[in-house]
Length: 406
Image (tube, helix red, strand yellow):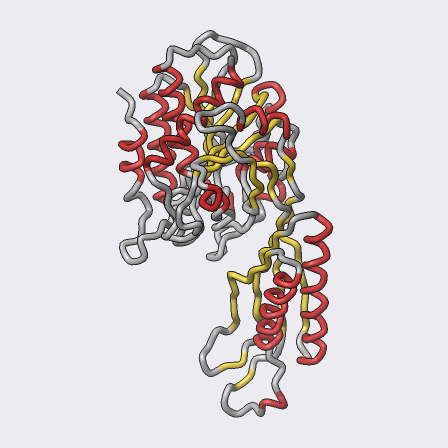
């Protein structure tokens, strides 16, 4: 007998959890994430589903009781986390997808097209710096020739990480999924990463769009020197240039009600008594339109360059990944949001990136469901959702899959 939602959720709770912070460290192709992939395989086999795993660890399991060869309805999400992340971002969509299949079977529903449950690898980009890495490879949006050159913070190349996890891309492997032939629609359920549904008093919402967003590496170069013997006037300190840039990003984003965050830095030589020779910092920027994103990043870059001139430091900015705005199919969103107990579900925008955005850009008809997060906090141990709301989400996903697979 397959596990129900609450049993599955309890089984996942300890995997990759920090005893100190209570947050999760489920980085891709590490032991916790590998354990979760094995758990997913076991749950799918308990339901009689055949699981396919591609060379980078993307997984999909199909339910096709009438042996239809029509393009299917795909759901699912991801199982990896950010560093010290929350429990719900990603796994909620996977557990809810399995529970929704159980709900459909309990109803006696037989889909006229296959229904698949997917798990995409490295959605967060927490290890190799490129968000939605697995779905980008599956959608053909990222060539393996580029992906294979990615390295993590410890200098481990992606092919070596895959090999350590029992995976690997062989010469001649085609990583692109035949999306057009196999997937008619993708529906991703996700915990909300904000307070919109809390403010509306709704347990579930439907996505209208994903804001455009990007990750940009700022390399500030200066001159290493002694912290005690070097006069302040004689310093070429890249930390000062970085510090002003971080303040500028905050100010510029606030002025236009957009988002800009420096959340990661790397300093060399990283000594208490040494002026740095180099500071590398990563900017995460998100805006309501593609033009607004380009303008915000340009304003931050201009201020950083101006400060670098005054500090005598050097600046190089590299766009590591930029995702354009995604507008989900409005007709599909309205259909999934309409005619539920208590009225229509709200249709809301999200500022967070998702695998659904990658599949939408690849031409797949795509929708997203959100489950209320009472704290509004995400990418943090404080991320949460009530079991009651999660079960509403399971029913919402089951209803959506039934409407799409009749």
